[in-house]
Every structure is written in C-alpha cells, then in structure tokens.
Image (cartoon, rainbow, N blue to C red; front, side, top):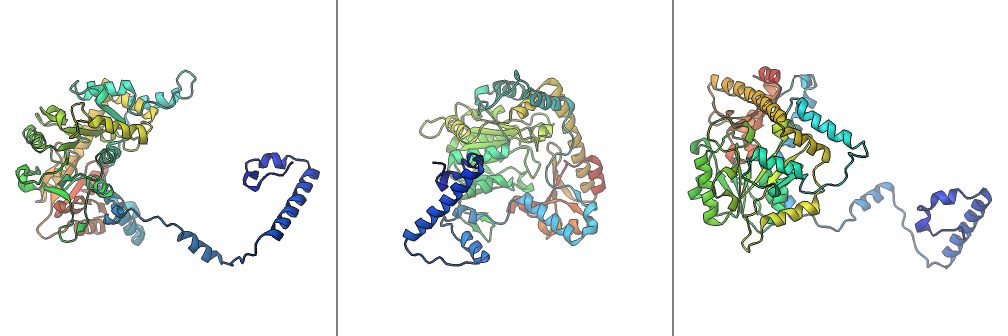
Length: 462
C-alpha cells in the first residue's frame, strides 16, 4: 500500500522518503519487480537511439504552431533597442571609447525622484509591512482617490473620475486601446511619429505589408508633418481613417499643436466619424500661453477622443511605471456601445491594476508639494532643451521643438541621411542621437536630440 503511481510519486516524495529503511527497500524491490513484469507483457517496441544533438534538434522542431503572420510584417527591431544595439556594437569594436559615450538619444529621465514624491512611494511600501496598512488586489481601474485627484488636479474637473483608468504607462495603454479596436479598422498616424502607433497596428493585423519604395505600410494612413506645414497635417487632403493617433507635444518633432489646430482635428473626427487617440505624455512641458495640454480643452472632444498620459516624464517615473487613460462616457461605437465599457473589459480581463505602491507615489505627485517638484524637474529639462537648440542654431542648423517639449528636431543639410549622420556622430564624437527616419519616412533628413540627459552630459555633448 506504500507504492504510489509514477505520476503522483513526485507530489508525495516527502512522504515516501520518510518511510523507514526496511520499508523503502521493500518498496524499491517491489517496484523493480513490477516494472520487470510489465515489460514482459508489453508489445515489442524498437527504441531508436539518438544523440544529444539529434534530440535537441528534434525538440526544437516539435511545434506545429504557425507564427502570427502579422509579426513577420514588422521590419527590423523596435527603434530604441536598435539604437542600443548599434551603440553596443560600436563599443565592442572600440572598447577604449566605452567610457566616452554621451547619450543625447533615448528620452529616459535621469534626475532623481524628488523628496515629496519619493515619500509617497516609501510610505506606500512601508504600509504593506503592517497589518493595518496591508492591501492586496485593488480595482483594475485604479485607486478611487488617485482617479479623483487626476480628474481634479490635472483636468480641473472637465473629466469625471469614473472616466480615468490608471495603468502602468501610456505605451501599454496604446496597445490596450488597439485591442479594443481590433483588426478591422484603418489607422492614421503623424509622419514622423512615435513608433508604437504603427508597430501595434501591424501586430493587431490592421495593415498590409510594408511598401519597399515608400517604406510605409499598406492600409495605414500617413499624415505628413514636416517643417513645410508646421508639423501639423493637411487634414483636408488626408484619406478617411477610423482611428487617428495624434501626439502633442509631439515626439519626435517637439511641435505643440495650437488650440486652433486641435479644433480642426476634432472637427475632422466629428465629420468623418473617427476616434481620436490623443497622446499627451509631454503635456507638462508646455509653457506657451494658449497651447492646450489636454484634448478635452477643445469643445466637442468628449464625443470623439481618448487621451493617454503618463507620470513617466512628469516625475521621473520611467522605471516606476504609472500612467492613465481617459475614456469619456459620450464616446461610442457606431452601434451605440460605450467605448469605455470595452476598454474597461480589457483592463479587468488582462490587467490587475497598477502597483499600490506606485499609486501612492502618484498621489504624492498631485499634492501641491509634488506638483511644485514636477515643475522644477520640467524646468531643468527645458533648460537642457534650450542649450541644445541654441547650440545647433548657432552653427547654422534649422531647429524645431525644444520650447514646449523636451525634444529638439534638427534638420540636416540636403542629401544627408539621418541614419548615416547618426553613425557619423557616434563614430567621430561618441555622441548618441536618434535618426529621424526611425520615426517613419517623414523623419528622414532630421535628427532628434533629447533633453533628458544630466546637464553636464548635455554640455559635454555639445
């Protein structure tokens, strides 16, 4: 009675090994006898002999699952890891230059989290070590007090707390929004634009293949945004799209859309029945009077728009991860279903809510002391942007952005490619930039410089 089936022996191994030695000897002997008997009555089978290498090859080839064809449409790697790969390759080829690399590229914050905001994170973490303060799963939409505070402090009450969905960042929410829309929609993006809009559209099956001549995906509407049109699309000559992604202040161009421009955008969405996904991740960098920080400052936007935002650039939360998305009650699909309901279903099905520790930090961000600390951080990075812009202009380049945004978009001389210039600057000056072409074909002929480096790094880079 001490013998267990082989399938359960692991589960009960502790009990087996606690048997006394005599019992174990009996069990082992009996098990061997039973195995021998079983083999005597088993049908004759020829067991092939395989080498370890053959077994490995066989194991690798076992899956019969076809690859998602949408992923095969993606060209190369995601932009920022590709920049890292090229930097690593340069250092590998030039190890003596490893300590000399200066990064003015990826938009990752570098300044420490300020004291009051940090205290919110620390206090929330400490509570988990007490019986009274411990909390487990929370609401997938976010803590009620934080949702309320976002609505009141950042939107001055023009949106409801129930329309706020707290998350782990705007980038993640863009994919969740895409999941709500599915594969049957046509997407429009600014060109150039943040690569996530295009790549997630490809992953969801909204696109055809990439055109090797234009370097654009079929079935995506590209809205040219260049210095010739002040980086705002000619809406009268843009084909109809179901979903329009728009970022202001823009990554990579640094252009912040005016109220008049956003009014035209909202009117266009109303006219053709489109949904606008407005990325406001760089809103706190806006310093110019009259430039909207939220799409919901525009009349009628509640009928057509979703807004995604994040604490990443507000408070140095790029690694902490905390963002939010606003989905107004008035926004519906063509059958009258509230978009909010489907987004809520995505959040409650595929997300367990942002970390309760991190949400405590978010609460501290929106205290008066936290907002003052955020303004100090933003001023610091805008100071860097001014240094970059002034320096590039002083040597004769045309430069855009850097006023209401942490990015400086530099126009290259005629005939200079952005990837070629990226490589040239890396090899000759050991400075990492971002080629404009990485944000779409409309970015060819430009470089993006980031103001998120420490001040001394910016000065050394210049």
